Image (cartoon, rainbow, N blue to C red; front, side, top):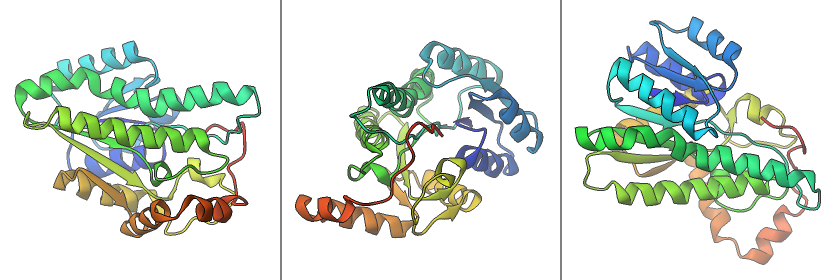
Length: 251
């Protein structure tokens, strides 16, 4: 198992879930101290990589090191992501938008890249991208995050087709609200919110099933479907005054 964004939230919960099942882990996060804390709570000795998924060269080095130590992984989970409130009229938010897109979209590709050829040669493996129901529609005040998750879903779909018949499955998971540091700052109601460990168990079931795309929990799949069906005029009226994530707070 190779998991990014493993220092907190869903990534840390997935690491705990798979470590309990005896998996050999490679864990990636920007914050080494937080990554060490997670590793201390896990059985075994996971390989730790303190790097940013936006750094493609560093991610390639981490992937190659992991395979040199443990062989081709069965599952790679591109979970790392950032979220920040943005408004385009603020010049400084353009940099924030670029950061979100680089991490949440290009970071998935950088995570997968070292493993694709070895997995194809082995004719096995699962590449898992963690997207979000936020990719279903543009959410006011979170345009960067919504755009990044919509792009992630589309990228993963393209990759799934590219690898069809190779023995390598591409799985897209779109969580709804999960109780993590990323959602703790949200100043609005979050329906069907899940604890991180419960979300990890459900995500693991989706991965085991090799599903092309699943929303967790299923109730948020209904919400996302209804949101997509809303006419633009009605959607605009309903969400014009919706609560917004604070600007300038990257999580």
